Image 1 (cartoon, each protein chain N blue to C red):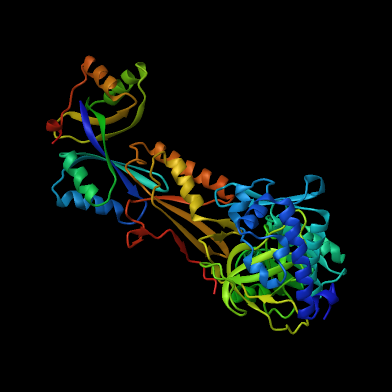
Image 2 (cartoon, rainbow over the protein chains, first blue to last red):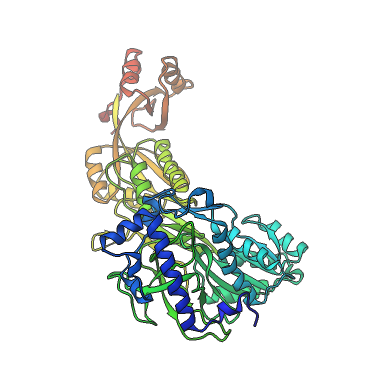
Length: 435
Length: 141
Protein backbone atom coordinates (compact mmCIF):
# COMPACT_ATOMS: atom_id res chain seq x y z
CA UNK A 1 0.00 0.00 0.00
CA UNK A 2 1.39 3.37 -0.93
CA UNK A 3 0.55 6.69 0.65
CA UNK A 4 1.19 10.28 -0.35
CA UNK A 5 1.24 11.47 3.25
CA UNK A 6 1.40 8.37 5.43
CA UNK A 7 1.60 10.11 8.82
CA UNK A 8 -1.60 12.00 8.18
CA UNK A 9 -3.48 9.32 6.27
CA UNK A 10 -2.89 6.65 8.94
CA UNK A 11 -2.96 8.94 11.97
CA UNK A 12 -4.69 7.31 14.98
CA UNK A 13 -8.19 8.74 15.29
CA UNK A 14 -7.64 10.31 18.70
CA UNK A 15 -4.67 12.21 17.34
CA UNK A 16 -6.62 13.09 14.20
CA UNK A 17 -9.44 14.49 16.34
CA UNK A 18 -6.99 16.61 18.31
CA UNK A 19 -5.62 17.97 15.03
CA UNK A 20 -9.17 18.66 13.84
CA UNK A 21 -10.05 20.60 17.00
CA UNK A 22 -6.94 22.72 16.77
CA UNK A 23 -7.65 23.51 13.11
CA UNK A 24 -11.38 23.99 13.67
CA UNK A 25 -10.75 26.64 16.30
CA UNK A 26 -8.43 28.49 13.95
CA UNK A 27 -10.80 28.16 11.00
CA UNK A 28 -13.76 29.49 12.97
CA UNK A 29 -11.72 32.40 14.33
CA UNK A 30 -10.44 33.18 10.80
CA UNK A 31 -13.96 33.10 9.34
CA UNK A 32 -15.53 35.02 12.22
CA UNK A 33 -12.98 37.77 11.85
CA UNK A 34 -13.26 38.13 8.08
CA UNK A 35 -16.73 37.03 6.91
CA UNK A 36 -19.52 39.33 8.01
CA UNK A 37 -22.35 36.91 7.28
CA UNK A 38 -20.83 34.24 9.53
CA UNK A 39 -19.98 36.74 12.25
CA UNK A 40 -23.57 38.02 12.31
CA UNK A 41 -24.99 34.53 12.58
CA UNK A 42 -22.63 33.67 15.43
CA UNK A 43 -23.47 36.92 17.21
CA UNK A 44 -27.20 36.24 16.85
CA UNK A 45 -26.66 33.01 18.78
CA UNK A 46 -24.44 34.77 21.30
CA UNK A 47 -21.48 32.63 20.21
CA UNK A 48 -17.84 33.64 20.05
CA UNK A 49 -15.04 31.61 18.44
CA UNK A 50 -13.64 30.98 21.96
CA UNK A 51 -16.81 29.04 22.81
CA UNK A 52 -15.65 26.21 20.59
CA UNK A 53 -13.77 24.11 23.11
CA UNK A 54 -14.44 20.64 21.74
CA UNK A 55 -15.45 19.06 18.42
CA UNK A 56 -18.93 18.55 19.93
CA UNK A 57 -19.26 22.32 20.37
CA UNK A 58 -19.44 22.61 16.59
CA UNK A 59 -23.10 21.51 16.86
CA UNK A 60 -23.90 24.96 18.33
CA UNK A 61 -22.51 26.80 15.31
CA UNK A 62 -25.00 28.02 12.69
CA UNK A 63 -25.26 26.23 9.33
CA UNK A 64 -24.40 27.73 5.98
CA UNK A 65 -26.28 27.09 2.76
CA UNK A 66 -25.91 27.23 -1.00
CA UNK A 67 -28.27 30.20 -0.92
CA UNK A 68 -25.61 32.16 0.97
CA UNK A 69 -23.32 31.91 -2.05
CA UNK A 70 -25.97 33.58 -4.17
CA UNK A 71 -26.93 36.18 -1.58
CA UNK A 72 -23.32 37.26 -1.07
CA UNK A 73 -22.29 36.91 -4.73
CA UNK A 74 -19.64 37.49 -5.85
CA UNK A 75 -17.10 37.99 -3.03
CA UNK A 76 -19.14 38.51 0.15
CA UNK A 77 -18.07 35.20 1.67
CA UNK A 78 -14.38 35.47 0.78
CA UNK A 79 -12.09 35.53 3.80
CA UNK A 80 -9.04 36.80 1.93
CA UNK A 81 -8.54 39.97 -0.10
CA UNK A 82 -8.44 39.33 -3.85
CA UNK A 83 -4.72 40.12 -3.74
CA UNK A 84 -4.25 36.71 -2.09
CA UNK A 85 -6.66 34.90 -4.39
CA UNK A 86 -5.03 33.10 -7.32
CA UNK A 87 -7.99 31.25 -8.86
CA UNK A 88 -11.77 31.36 -9.19
CA UNK A 89 -14.14 28.53 -9.92
CA UNK A 90 -17.86 28.86 -10.44
CA UNK A 91 -20.97 26.79 -10.97
CA UNK A 92 -24.62 27.40 -11.65
CA UNK A 93 -26.82 28.17 -8.69
CA UNK A 94 -30.51 27.57 -8.08
CA UNK A 95 -31.79 30.63 -9.86
CA UNK A 96 -29.47 30.76 -12.79
CA UNK A 97 -27.23 33.10 -10.87
CA UNK A 98 -23.79 31.61 -10.63
CA UNK A 99 -21.91 30.97 -7.45
CA UNK A 100 -18.23 31.76 -7.30
CA UNK A 101 -15.48 30.55 -4.99
CA UNK A 102 -11.85 31.61 -4.65
CA UNK A 103 -8.59 29.88 -3.79
CA UNK A 104 -5.28 31.08 -2.41
CA UNK A 105 -2.12 29.33 -3.50
CA UNK A 106 -2.23 27.28 -0.28
CA UNK A 107 -5.88 26.34 -0.96
CA UNK A 108 -4.88 25.00 -4.36
CA UNK A 109 -2.09 22.98 -2.74
CA UNK A 110 -4.53 21.44 -0.27
CA UNK A 111 -6.94 20.61 -3.08
CA UNK A 112 -4.22 19.01 -5.20
CA UNK A 113 -3.03 17.00 -2.22
CA UNK A 114 -6.53 15.66 -1.49
CA UNK A 115 -7.07 14.22 -4.96
CA UNK A 116 -3.40 13.15 -5.19
CA UNK A 117 -3.77 11.02 -2.05
CA UNK A 118 -6.39 9.03 -3.92
CA UNK A 119 -4.22 8.59 -6.96
CA UNK A 120 -1.29 7.38 -4.88
CA UNK A 121 -3.54 4.98 -3.01
CA UNK A 122 -4.56 3.42 -6.29
CA UNK A 123 -0.91 2.91 -7.19
CA UNK A 124 -0.56 5.84 -9.58
CA UNK A 125 3.05 7.12 -9.77
CA UNK A 126 5.14 9.55 -11.80
CA UNK A 127 5.37 6.81 -14.44
CA UNK A 128 1.68 7.22 -15.24
CA UNK A 129 0.08 9.11 -18.10
CA UNK A 130 -3.17 10.75 -17.01
CA UNK A 131 -5.82 11.77 -19.49
CA UNK A 132 -8.11 14.39 -17.96
CA UNK A 133 -11.42 14.39 -19.81
CA UNK A 134 -13.34 16.48 -17.31
CA UNK A 135 -14.17 19.96 -18.55
CA UNK A 136 -11.54 22.60 -17.91
CA UNK A 137 -12.69 26.05 -17.01
CA UNK A 138 -14.91 27.41 -14.29
CA UNK A 139 -16.04 23.85 -13.53
CA UNK A 140 -13.74 22.36 -10.88
CA UNK A 141 -13.43 18.92 -12.50
CA UNK A 142 -10.64 19.45 -15.01
CA UNK A 143 -8.24 21.58 -13.00
CA UNK A 144 -8.89 19.60 -9.80
CA UNK A 145 -7.55 16.27 -10.99
CA UNK A 146 -5.04 17.96 -13.30
CA UNK A 147 -3.17 19.57 -10.39
CA UNK A 148 -3.29 16.36 -8.38
CA UNK A 149 -1.74 14.34 -11.21
CA UNK A 150 0.93 16.98 -11.75
CA UNK A 151 1.73 16.99 -8.05
CA UNK A 152 2.55 13.29 -8.25
CA UNK A 153 4.61 13.92 -11.36
CA UNK A 154 2.34 12.14 -13.84
CA UNK A 155 2.36 13.19 -17.47
CA UNK A 156 -1.00 14.91 -17.93
CA UNK A 157 -3.03 15.03 -21.14
CA UNK A 158 -5.38 17.99 -20.58
CA UNK A 159 -8.07 16.84 -23.00
CA UNK A 160 -11.11 18.49 -21.43
CA UNK A 161 -14.51 17.06 -22.37
CA UNK A 162 -15.98 16.24 -25.78
CA UNK A 163 -14.55 15.12 -29.12
CA UNK A 164 -14.74 11.41 -28.42
CA UNK A 165 -12.76 10.39 -31.50
CA UNK A 166 -9.77 12.50 -30.51
CA UNK A 167 -10.09 11.34 -26.90
CA UNK A 168 -9.71 7.74 -28.00
CA UNK A 169 -6.91 8.53 -30.42
CA UNK A 170 -4.93 10.30 -27.67
CA UNK A 171 -5.53 7.46 -25.24
CA UNK A 172 -4.04 5.10 -27.81
CA UNK A 173 -1.25 7.30 -29.20
CA UNK A 174 -0.04 8.68 -25.86
CA UNK A 175 -0.57 5.40 -24.01
CA UNK A 176 -2.76 6.89 -21.28
CA UNK A 177 -2.75 4.73 -18.15
CA UNK A 178 -5.28 6.77 -16.16
CA UNK A 179 -8.59 8.25 -17.31
CA UNK A 180 -10.44 10.96 -15.37
CA UNK A 181 -13.97 11.92 -16.47
CA UNK A 182 -17.65 11.60 -15.54
CA UNK A 183 -18.82 7.98 -15.28
CA UNK A 184 -21.41 8.44 -18.01
CA UNK A 185 -18.74 9.71 -20.37
CA UNK A 186 -16.52 6.75 -19.41
CA UNK A 187 -19.40 4.44 -20.40
CA UNK A 188 -19.65 6.22 -23.72
CA UNK A 189 -15.89 6.07 -24.33
CA UNK A 190 -15.95 2.36 -23.46
CA UNK A 191 -18.60 1.69 -26.07
CA UNK A 192 -16.83 3.69 -28.74
CA UNK A 193 -13.48 2.04 -28.02
CA UNK A 194 -15.02 -1.39 -28.42
CA UNK A 195 -16.93 -0.40 -31.51
CA UNK A 196 -13.67 0.75 -33.07
CA UNK A 197 -11.99 -2.48 -31.95
CA UNK A 198 -9.28 -0.53 -30.12
CA UNK A 199 -9.55 -2.04 -26.66
CA UNK A 200 -6.36 -4.09 -27.14
CA UNK A 201 -4.47 -0.92 -27.95
CA UNK A 202 -5.38 0.75 -24.63
CA UNK A 203 -2.96 0.82 -21.70
CA UNK A 204 -5.48 2.13 -19.16
CA UNK A 205 -5.08 0.84 -15.60
CA UNK A 206 -7.18 3.20 -13.50
CA UNK A 207 -10.19 5.41 -13.90
CA UNK A 208 -11.16 8.25 -11.58
CA UNK A 209 -14.81 9.04 -12.11
CA UNK A 210 -17.11 11.48 -10.35
CA UNK A 211 -19.23 14.66 -10.56
CA UNK A 212 -22.45 12.69 -10.99
CA UNK A 213 -24.15 9.71 -9.36
CA UNK A 214 -23.31 6.24 -10.68
CA UNK A 215 -23.90 2.66 -9.70
CA UNK A 216 -22.00 -0.55 -9.08
CA UNK A 217 -23.36 -1.96 -12.32
CA UNK A 218 -21.99 1.03 -14.21
CA UNK A 219 -18.68 0.44 -12.48
CA UNK A 220 -18.63 -3.19 -13.63
CA UNK A 221 -19.53 -2.13 -17.15
CA UNK A 222 -16.82 0.55 -17.35
CA UNK A 223 -14.17 -1.75 -15.86
CA UNK A 224 -15.00 -4.36 -18.44
CA UNK A 225 -15.24 -2.10 -21.49
CA UNK A 226 -12.10 -0.06 -20.79
CA UNK A 227 -10.11 -2.73 -18.92
CA UNK A 228 -9.34 -0.57 -15.90
CA UNK A 229 -10.04 -0.26 -12.19
CA UNK A 230 -12.75 2.37 -11.74
CA UNK A 231 -12.85 4.51 -8.59
CA UNK A 232 -15.22 7.12 -7.28
CA UNK A 233 -14.30 10.68 -6.39
CA UNK A 234 -16.59 13.16 -4.60
CA UNK A 235 -16.46 16.88 -4.14
CA UNK A 236 -18.35 20.14 -4.23
CA UNK A 237 -17.20 23.43 -5.67
CA UNK A 238 -18.34 25.16 -2.47
CA UNK A 239 -16.17 22.92 -0.29
CA UNK A 240 -13.12 22.78 -2.62
CA UNK A 241 -13.89 20.60 -5.67
CA UNK A 242 -13.32 16.94 -6.52
CA UNK A 243 -11.16 15.24 -3.91
CA UNK A 244 -13.03 16.10 -0.70
CA UNK A 245 -13.62 12.34 -0.52
CA UNK A 246 -12.18 9.54 -2.65
CA UNK A 247 -12.15 5.80 -2.83
CA UNK A 248 -8.91 4.02 -2.06
CA UNK A 249 -7.81 0.81 -3.77
CA UNK A 250 -10.24 -1.14 -1.55
CA UNK A 251 -13.24 0.48 -3.29
CA UNK A 252 -15.14 0.35 0.02
CA UNK A 253 -16.43 3.90 0.47
CA UNK A 254 -14.81 7.26 -0.07
CA UNK A 255 -12.29 8.50 2.50
CA UNK A 256 -13.06 12.02 3.60
CA UNK A 257 -9.74 13.73 4.25
CA UNK A 258 -10.50 14.66 7.82
CA UNK A 259 -7.39 16.73 8.39
CA UNK A 260 -8.93 19.25 5.96
CA UNK A 261 -12.68 18.61 6.16
CA UNK A 262 -14.85 17.82 9.15
CA UNK A 263 -17.97 15.83 8.29
CA UNK A 264 -21.19 15.63 10.26
CA UNK A 265 -24.40 13.75 9.57
CA UNK A 266 -27.52 15.65 10.58
CA UNK A 267 -31.26 15.26 10.45
CA UNK A 268 -32.16 17.46 7.47
CA UNK A 269 -35.43 18.54 9.09
CA UNK A 270 -34.35 19.35 12.64
CA UNK A 271 -30.68 20.10 12.00
CA UNK A 272 -29.68 17.85 14.90
CA UNK A 273 -26.41 15.94 14.71
CA UNK A 274 -27.16 12.23 14.38
CA UNK A 275 -25.20 9.47 16.12
CA UNK A 276 -22.36 7.66 14.35
CA UNK A 277 -23.54 5.25 11.70
CA UNK A 278 -26.86 7.08 11.00
CA UNK A 279 -28.03 8.03 7.54
CA UNK A 280 -28.72 11.72 7.11
CA UNK A 281 -27.57 14.91 5.43
CA UNK A 282 -23.85 15.39 5.04
CA UNK A 283 -22.50 18.66 6.42
CA UNK A 284 -18.95 19.89 5.86
CA UNK A 285 -16.73 22.30 7.71
CA UNK A 286 -13.44 23.17 6.11
CA UNK A 287 -10.49 23.14 8.53
CA UNK A 288 -7.68 24.72 6.57
CA UNK A 289 -9.23 26.85 3.85
CA UNK A 290 -8.11 30.45 3.53
CA UNK A 291 -9.99 32.22 0.73
CA UNK A 292 -13.35 30.45 0.99
CA UNK A 293 -13.85 28.74 4.34
CA UNK A 294 -17.15 26.89 4.76
CA UNK A 295 -18.61 26.33 8.21
CA UNK A 296 -21.26 23.62 8.62
CA UNK A 297 -22.14 23.75 4.94
CA UNK A 298 -25.31 21.82 4.11
CA UNK A 299 -24.50 19.62 1.10
CA UNK A 300 -28.09 18.28 0.82
CA UNK A 301 -26.53 14.90 0.00
CA UNK A 302 -28.01 12.08 2.03
CA UNK A 303 -25.47 9.46 3.07
CA UNK A 304 -23.93 7.45 5.89
CA UNK A 305 -20.42 7.58 7.33
CA UNK A 306 -18.31 4.54 8.17
CA UNK A 307 -15.87 5.05 11.05
CA UNK A 308 -14.34 1.55 11.16
CA UNK A 309 -10.72 1.34 10.01
CA UNK A 310 -10.29 0.57 6.33
CA UNK A 311 -8.28 -2.38 5.06
CA UNK A 312 -6.02 0.07 3.27
CA UNK A 313 -4.69 1.24 6.65
CA UNK A 314 -6.15 4.73 6.41
CA UNK A 315 -7.92 5.96 9.51
CA UNK A 316 -9.97 8.68 7.83
CA UNK A 317 -13.65 7.86 7.84
CA UNK A 318 -15.45 6.79 4.68
CA UNK A 319 -18.71 8.07 3.22
CA UNK A 320 -21.01 5.81 1.28
CA UNK A 321 -22.27 6.94 -2.11
CA UNK A 322 -24.93 9.63 -1.59
CA UNK A 323 -28.31 7.90 -1.66
CA UNK A 324 -30.30 10.94 -2.59
CA UNK A 325 -30.84 14.59 -1.87
CA UNK A 326 -32.65 16.37 0.92
CA UNK A 327 -33.80 18.95 -1.63
CA UNK A 328 -35.15 18.48 -5.13
CA UNK A 329 -31.89 19.01 -7.00
CA UNK A 330 -31.24 16.82 -10.01
CA UNK A 331 -27.82 16.15 -11.47
CA UNK A 332 -28.15 15.99 -15.25
CA UNK A 333 -25.02 15.44 -17.34
CA UNK A 334 -22.99 16.52 -14.34
CA UNK A 335 -24.88 19.80 -14.01
CA UNK A 336 -27.00 20.74 -10.99
CA UNK A 337 -30.59 21.44 -11.94
CA UNK A 338 -33.35 22.62 -9.63
CA UNK A 339 -37.02 22.47 -10.66
CA UNK A 340 -37.34 26.03 -9.35
CA UNK A 341 -34.98 27.21 -12.10
CA UNK A 342 -37.28 25.76 -14.73
CA UNK A 343 -40.26 27.35 -13.04
CA UNK A 344 -38.62 30.76 -13.23
CA UNK A 345 -37.79 30.37 -16.90
CA UNK A 346 -41.38 29.40 -17.67
CA UNK A 347 -42.77 32.33 -15.74
CA UNK A 348 -40.43 34.68 -17.57
CA UNK A 349 -41.10 33.30 -21.05
CA UNK A 350 -44.83 32.61 -20.90
CA UNK A 351 -45.69 36.27 -20.61
CA UNK A 352 -48.52 35.57 -18.22
CA UNK A 353 -48.82 35.86 -14.47
CA UNK A 354 -49.17 32.16 -14.02
CA UNK A 355 -46.46 29.58 -14.35
CA UNK A 356 -47.58 26.96 -16.83
CA UNK A 357 -47.75 23.45 -15.50
CA UNK A 358 -44.61 21.54 -16.34
CA UNK A 359 -42.87 18.25 -15.84
CA UNK A 360 -39.21 17.34 -16.05
CA UNK A 361 -38.42 13.92 -17.45
CA UNK A 362 -34.87 12.64 -17.05
CA UNK A 363 -33.70 9.34 -18.45
CA UNK A 364 -30.45 7.71 -19.38
CA UNK A 365 -30.36 6.46 -22.95
CA UNK A 366 -27.18 5.03 -24.45
CA UNK A 367 -25.42 6.07 -21.27
CA UNK A 368 -26.12 9.70 -21.63
CA UNK A 369 -28.73 11.68 -19.76
CA UNK A 370 -31.78 12.86 -21.65
CA UNK A 371 -33.57 15.92 -20.35
CA UNK A 372 -37.10 16.75 -21.48
CA UNK A 373 -39.40 19.45 -20.21
CA UNK A 374 -43.11 19.06 -20.90
CA UNK A 375 -45.04 22.28 -20.69
CA UNK A 376 -48.82 22.32 -20.59
CA UNK A 377 -50.31 24.50 -23.26
CA UNK A 378 -52.80 27.10 -22.12
CA UNK A 379 -55.19 29.54 -23.77
CA UNK A 380 -52.75 32.30 -22.87
CA UNK A 381 -49.86 30.60 -24.68
CA UNK A 382 -51.83 29.36 -27.64
CA UNK A 383 -52.09 31.41 -30.79
CA UNK A 384 -53.63 30.64 -34.13
CA UNK A 385 -50.29 30.99 -35.83
CA UNK A 386 -47.74 28.22 -35.83
CA UNK A 387 -44.79 30.59 -35.77
CA UNK A 388 -45.88 32.32 -32.59
CA UNK A 389 -46.20 28.98 -30.81
CA UNK A 390 -42.84 27.95 -32.20
CA UNK A 391 -41.31 31.14 -30.96
CA UNK A 392 -42.57 30.44 -27.43
CA UNK A 393 -41.07 26.98 -27.65
CA UNK A 394 -37.77 28.38 -28.87
CA UNK A 395 -37.71 31.07 -26.22
CA UNK A 396 -38.24 28.52 -23.47
CA UNK A 397 -35.55 26.28 -24.95
CA UNK A 398 -32.95 29.01 -25.23
CA UNK A 399 -33.75 30.48 -21.79
CA UNK A 400 -33.41 27.03 -20.24
CA UNK A 401 -30.06 26.58 -21.92
CA UNK A 402 -28.69 29.89 -20.74
CA UNK A 403 -30.04 29.46 -17.21
CA UNK A 404 -29.07 25.84 -16.66
CA UNK A 405 -26.04 25.57 -18.90
CA UNK A 406 -27.38 22.41 -20.54
CA UNK A 407 -29.91 21.84 -23.26
CA UNK A 408 -33.40 20.52 -22.66
CA UNK A 409 -35.93 19.33 -25.19
CA UNK A 410 -39.15 21.28 -24.71
CA UNK A 411 -42.51 19.72 -25.56
CA UNK A 412 -45.80 21.56 -25.51
CA UNK A 413 -48.45 19.19 -24.26
CA UNK A 414 -52.21 19.27 -23.75
CA UNK A 415 -53.58 20.97 -20.68
CA UNK A 416 -54.25 18.68 -17.72
CA UNK A 417 -52.19 15.96 -19.38
CA UNK A 418 -49.41 16.05 -16.79
CA UNK A 419 -49.96 13.50 -14.10
CA UNK A 420 -51.22 14.93 -10.84
CA UNK A 421 -51.41 13.44 -7.42
CA UNK A 422 -53.79 15.06 -4.95
CA UNK A 423 -54.10 18.01 -7.28
CA UNK A 424 -50.37 18.62 -7.34
CA UNK A 425 -48.59 17.97 -10.60
CA UNK A 426 -45.71 15.56 -10.45
CA UNK A 427 -42.79 17.82 -11.32
CA UNK A 428 -39.95 15.38 -11.79
CA UNK A 429 -39.79 11.95 -13.33
CA UNK A 430 -36.31 10.51 -13.07
CA UNK A 431 -36.24 7.26 -14.97
CA UNK A 432 -32.50 6.73 -14.57
CA UNK A 433 -31.82 3.48 -12.81
CA UNK A 434 -29.08 4.25 -10.38
CA UNK A 435 -29.27 1.27 -8.08
CA UNK B 1 -67.24 37.39 -45.68
CA UNK B 2 -65.67 37.06 -42.21
CA UNK B 3 -66.06 33.54 -40.97
CA UNK B 4 -65.31 32.06 -37.59
CA UNK B 5 -62.59 29.49 -37.70
CA UNK B 6 -61.62 27.11 -34.89
CA UNK B 7 -57.91 26.84 -34.22
CA UNK B 8 -57.11 23.78 -32.16
CA UNK B 9 -53.83 22.91 -30.47
CA UNK B 10 -52.93 19.31 -31.25
CA UNK B 11 -50.27 17.71 -29.13
CA UNK B 12 -47.92 15.54 -31.16
CA UNK B 13 -49.13 12.25 -29.78
CA UNK B 14 -50.77 9.21 -31.31
CA UNK B 15 -54.54 9.40 -31.45
CA UNK B 16 -54.92 13.08 -30.60
CA UNK B 17 -56.34 14.11 -33.96
CA UNK B 18 -58.66 11.16 -34.02
CA UNK B 19 -59.96 11.96 -30.52
CA UNK B 20 -60.72 15.56 -31.47
CA UNK B 21 -62.53 14.68 -34.71
CA UNK B 22 -64.50 11.88 -33.07
CA UNK B 23 -65.68 14.16 -30.31
CA UNK B 24 -66.95 16.67 -32.86
CA UNK B 25 -68.66 13.94 -34.86
CA UNK B 26 -70.40 12.53 -31.78
CA UNK B 27 -71.85 15.96 -31.14
CA UNK B 28 -73.10 16.44 -34.66
CA UNK B 29 -70.61 19.10 -35.63
CA UNK B 30 -70.32 19.31 -39.40
CA UNK B 31 -66.94 20.20 -40.88
CA UNK B 32 -66.71 21.96 -44.18
CA UNK B 33 -63.03 22.80 -44.24
CA UNK B 34 -60.01 21.45 -42.48
CA UNK B 35 -56.35 22.21 -42.53
CA UNK B 36 -53.58 20.91 -40.34
CA UNK B 37 -50.40 22.88 -39.88
CA UNK B 38 -47.77 20.68 -38.36
CA UNK B 39 -44.31 21.01 -36.86
CA UNK B 40 -42.18 18.22 -35.45
CA UNK B 41 -43.51 19.02 -31.99
CA UNK B 42 -47.18 19.96 -32.35
CA UNK B 43 -49.92 20.78 -34.80
CA UNK B 44 -52.55 23.45 -35.24
CA UNK B 45 -55.79 22.13 -36.63
CA UNK B 46 -57.98 24.72 -38.35
CA UNK B 47 -61.62 24.00 -38.91
CA UNK B 48 -64.64 25.69 -40.43
CA UNK B 49 -67.66 24.14 -38.76
CA UNK B 50 -71.40 24.72 -38.71
CA UNK B 51 -71.45 25.75 -35.04
CA UNK B 52 -68.07 27.10 -33.90
CA UNK B 53 -69.20 28.22 -30.42
CA UNK B 54 -70.69 24.83 -29.59
CA UNK B 55 -67.63 23.07 -31.00
CA UNK B 56 -65.37 25.17 -28.80
CA UNK B 57 -67.34 24.25 -25.68
CA UNK B 58 -67.26 20.57 -26.56
CA UNK B 59 -63.52 20.58 -27.12
CA UNK B 60 -62.78 22.67 -24.04
CA UNK B 61 -64.60 20.09 -21.97
CA UNK B 62 -62.12 17.57 -23.31
CA UNK B 63 -59.24 19.73 -22.16
CA UNK B 64 -58.41 20.75 -25.71
CA UNK B 65 -57.26 24.30 -26.31
CA UNK B 66 -59.31 26.13 -28.92
CA UNK B 67 -59.30 29.65 -30.20
CA UNK B 68 -61.90 31.21 -32.43
CA UNK B 69 -60.32 33.34 -35.11
CA UNK B 70 -61.91 35.54 -37.77
CA UNK B 71 -60.81 34.52 -41.24
CA UNK B 72 -61.86 35.45 -44.75
CA UNK B 73 -64.00 32.97 -46.63
CA UNK B 74 -63.83 33.95 -50.27
CA UNK B 75 -65.74 32.61 -53.22
CA UNK B 76 -63.59 32.04 -56.24
CA UNK B 77 -64.40 31.35 -59.84
CA UNK B 78 -63.74 27.70 -60.45
CA UNK B 79 -61.51 28.59 -63.38
CA UNK B 80 -57.80 29.28 -63.98
CA UNK B 81 -56.74 32.48 -62.20
CA UNK B 82 -59.60 32.38 -59.69
CA UNK B 83 -57.36 32.34 -56.63
CA UNK B 84 -54.60 34.40 -58.25
CA UNK B 85 -56.97 37.36 -58.71
CA UNK B 86 -57.80 37.56 -54.99
CA UNK B 87 -54.23 37.10 -53.78
CA UNK B 88 -52.99 39.71 -56.28
CA UNK B 89 -55.52 42.19 -54.94
CA UNK B 90 -54.38 41.63 -51.34
CA UNK B 91 -50.74 41.88 -52.38
CA UNK B 92 -51.30 45.14 -54.29
CA UNK B 93 -52.86 46.57 -51.15
CA UNK B 94 -50.02 45.42 -48.96
CA UNK B 95 -52.08 42.93 -46.97
CA UNK B 96 -50.04 39.85 -46.20
CA UNK B 97 -51.55 36.39 -46.06
CA UNK B 98 -50.56 34.44 -42.97
CA UNK B 99 -52.01 31.15 -44.15
CA UNK B 100 -54.71 29.90 -46.44
CA UNK B 101 -56.41 26.74 -47.57
CA UNK B 102 -59.11 25.80 -50.00
CA UNK B 103 -62.27 23.79 -49.53
CA UNK B 104 -65.08 22.33 -51.47
CA UNK B 105 -68.58 23.74 -51.57
CA UNK B 106 -72.07 22.80 -52.44
CA UNK B 107 -72.32 25.87 -54.65
CA UNK B 108 -71.68 24.56 -58.14
CA UNK B 109 -69.11 26.18 -60.36
CA UNK B 110 -67.49 27.95 -57.44
CA UNK B 111 -64.45 27.16 -55.28
CA UNK B 112 -63.99 28.50 -51.79
CA UNK B 113 -60.83 29.68 -50.13
CA UNK B 114 -60.13 30.49 -46.48
CA UNK B 115 -57.45 33.05 -45.82
CA UNK B 116 -56.04 34.62 -42.67
CA UNK B 117 -54.43 37.98 -43.27
CA UNK B 118 -52.69 40.54 -41.15
CA UNK B 119 -55.70 42.87 -41.02
CA UNK B 120 -58.73 40.72 -41.63
CA UNK B 121 -61.27 43.58 -41.51
CA UNK B 122 -59.36 45.70 -44.00
CA UNK B 123 -58.96 42.72 -46.30
CA UNK B 124 -62.65 42.00 -46.02
CA UNK B 125 -63.59 45.57 -46.94
CA UNK B 126 -61.16 45.54 -49.80
CA UNK B 127 -62.57 42.36 -51.31
CA UNK B 128 -66.15 43.55 -50.98
CA UNK B 129 -65.25 46.87 -52.61
CA UNK B 130 -63.76 44.90 -55.49
CA UNK B 131 -66.85 42.82 -55.99
CA UNK B 132 -65.45 39.55 -54.74
CA UNK B 133 -68.34 37.32 -53.78
CA UNK B 134 -69.32 37.11 -50.16
CA UNK B 135 -69.72 33.76 -48.54
CA UNK B 136 -71.72 33.29 -45.40
CA UNK B 137 -71.93 30.25 -43.21
CA UNK B 138 -75.35 29.63 -44.69
CA UNK B 139 -73.87 29.23 -48.14
CA UNK B 140 -71.29 26.78 -46.91
CA UNK B 141 -73.52 24.38 -45.08
